[in-house]
Picture: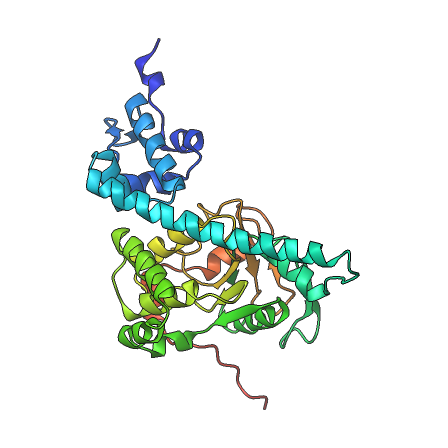
Length: 344
């Protein structure tokens, strides 16, 4: 048997592991795996590398940060304890949310024999929590009242479009149409981290969730900034069953953006759906979009918003790719807005 047959190229290794080649490079950057190099400099993954990578993938699926994965692989008991405690807290949060939904269903069932029929709002709220809600609503300007059908709501939906495409208006209208949805706008950046912490101080559970999430993100490479604290505070706040976030990358460096999207992708099935307005390639990496994610494009010519599949050649794919920019470019264009000249 040819020994070289035991070694896999990055694309084949990624396919067998069920991850992207970028994920493999990220593991390598954090020192979690060190593949061999051919004479030409190509990476090659042998049996030991694949076994190690499979362990990393499994731990990441459990919700462990890359720093926690490193401690577990080093058999660090303290690090393992912290990682398991964080995973326990995540599972408990999911259980509370599922228990709440189950209790609502039981309450509606108890009322049926007495002739009390659930309202449409009560039923749609349950469907929204299960990701099965379908909503049709009138689009705002510049679409002039056309209808849009939001279907098959998945845990993560990215809304993208060039400057002046109307994506923010679309997202705000979406937040108005969905039951118990909220819009987390850029005004979140106006408050300092100290102010935000003081506001949540009256709610110990909320403060604990925010601290746990921030610790997780920092371990994965994010800088502790006011913008990050403001974002996490909005994401962790209770109340809305759906959250629409305006320019989620605003004020965050690349490492923070990567940590945030990795965290959001590992949320449990009971978590509320999130709609993220973005133009950052770190948030919407077309090579790593999963089956539980959706892309909605607002075209530059104000034609109808469309669903786009993350595959080259699919309708709208090139337009989405054109809208995306690296975090460095996004930072340089911070504050740039679309301008429509007055009619002469």
